[in-house]
Length: 345
Image (cartoon, rainbow, N blue to C red):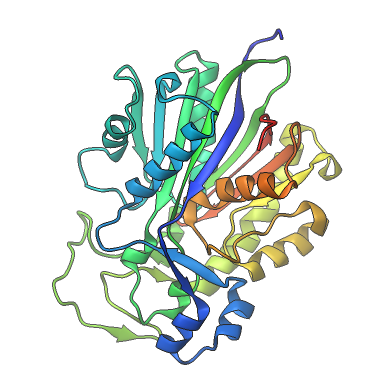
């Protein structure tokens, strides 16, 4: 094969914690919603939750080991590691550096963390593409993992029913090709919305509070300043505002028509939001992937998990043209097109 060096999606794997929390368990604790109501509101039947001594890096490590064991590549072939998380092991050192050592990647390997949420996978693809196509790397290991459960108050049904913990590992490799395999990209940021999805304390701006008072909102959700807060209506409005425009912009920049896309994989926020977007954009149901029923909203890992599930289900085939769309906390959003390269399951 001839042509310039291109970045290409080669393979992906994912990992969940061992503990699954079903709707029946949540309904028994929360009481104001039944198990059936939780599923009808969120499209989620169960989600996975880490133990007290389990971190996002542990999930990323497990996903990376599955990727290596699949035969997609070996640790020695990785020359750059990107770890996307909003729940790192420490403020410092960088979790990616610890993962380089733990995964026995070469010491000549670059490694960095990026702190980004629901759009993080697409941003990570953009970074990997830049590294590969400028000759800085040949095989980039993009790890995504989050443990939002550690931020959630047990009495906050608005987020406890929605988010799940998970990790994913994606291999982006170098190929020679006349045509682009990943890209173009459309990005967006509006930090004015940062307060609508936030953990207020724990960083340098506001320290973690010992024994903070608990408050309850109009919907009966309990939380403290140390917990995750989500303004659901504002997040929904933001999504409906930016995603259709991003969708249109990407098709225009790429010079593509919607009919040319084989599979649309959006960030798996919640079923209601996804279905609303699908209908608004006119995407055929058989081309629109929704697969969060058994794992919940896993933040930066939703898109790679959906990719792997679609591959296992036979919905994702070699050569398929994909539209990948991330949006959420920040506010941050990003979208790209990608060809699926790997032929084996």
